[in-house]
Amino acid sequence: MVLINIIIIIIIIIIIIISCSALLSQIITSKLENGNIKAAVRILNSDEKPSAPSEQTWSKLKEKHPAASKPLDGIPFPTQFASISVSELDMRRASLSFPAGSAGGPDGLRPQHLRDLLLSSESDPEFLSALTAFVNLMLAGGCPARVAPIFFGGRLLALDKKSGGIRPIVIGFTLRSLVSKCGILLVRKG
Image (cartoon, rainbow, N blue to C red):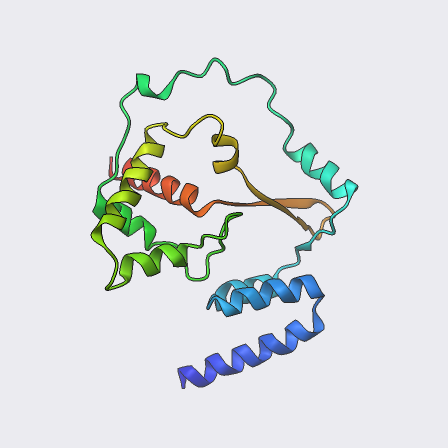
């Protein structure tokens, strides 16, 4: 019975996709292909649609997120303070906690790739150790200054709100998201 309901939902979504704009259809199809039916239904029911790329959209985005008002030169160097570090068990738990069908960042690495590598019977335990070491390096402030604007940046999209404004959405790198998840996990553990 559950399988029949899922098939009916997918058929309904496919019919709706056919009547949507090409961009919206592409987004919904991508969610379905990744097994994220919940996200596809949420997008279909949303009043917000992708904004057309234009100078006007870019101006609205810059109004919402202006450039930094002062230089960041006065920020203390991270190694002056004790840093937090995550265990391999917590790092593994954080890696596997991404929702199904989570998007990849600008580099194309998806959380599913990490999941597949961690759960593979052929995966070497050194992968988990290396990934944990990388996350701990980032948590300790070890991201090189020249790399930081890229690593902590992302792909910017805009959605048109029903009220006439726009909603900025940033799709960041999966590894940066993983570092954030681990940091939050550690803070919550206290």
